[in-house]
Length: 201
Image (cartoon, rainbow, N blue to C red; front, top):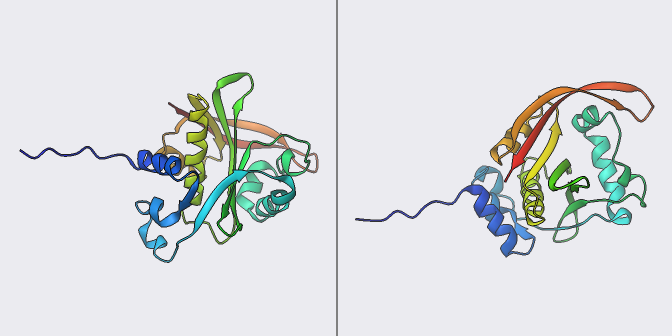
């Protein structure tokens, strides 16, 4: 009687791939199961590196400013580390092999609870959207936090954000929805409808 080999989940395969290649990836190799038709013309090698204010800040701010969806959610407030080089950053930047900016993911361990992490945001530049780079940066963030002994990751999102489907596919669950008050760049107070999600190991 033939014994069937157990199939590995997409997340497991992707996580292993991230570790094996030392954070240098080829889109075709990793994304095939997500959207094969969009990958036939793509063969982009890329790497993950720490955020550098001098190299990355302006490019990231440009992506923030051009992304109306992000701006509506954040109230047109860019993260402090993009404005001030003295502000600590936990962001990682995704670049192509020829050093072209693809996107950025910001996440960190919570200072008051080292076993818990927080995913701040994911940005993908024009020309690279819809090709799975957001998913790959999310997987990288989850894996990196797991390697730092984090057992729970939280994030916020607009309730109508299509990315919530991606978060849920990678293990996040909706836990709470409520209104939050934030201060915009021009000093105005606005209330935003916020969906909270969490991932547990």
